[in-house]
Image (cartoon, rainbow, N blue to C red; front, side, top):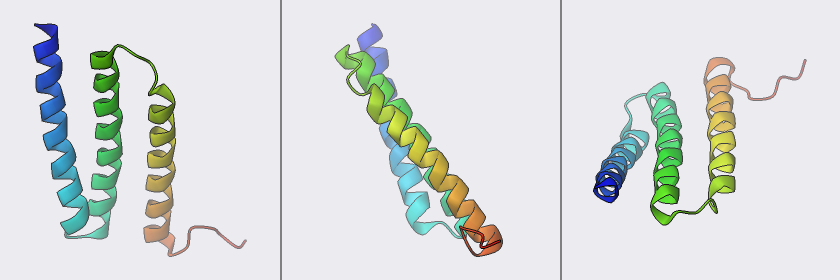
Length: 91
């Protein structure tokens, strides 16, 4: 029963990843694309976490850590770029 629940949640996460990817590509504004990219990263972390439970391994824990750091830094950098026009201040 638990295996069926995991497979259903993987299918739902796959659908969510696809919807976030579509919103990232055809988002009407740049802030919508940034939010979709951030939620794509969060969904990818959850997908890999469920995959780790299905495979009964902790081999992908470093991958989850790297994706979470990159998603956070990317969201902050893109938000700062939209707000100010530059990522690094020259002050």
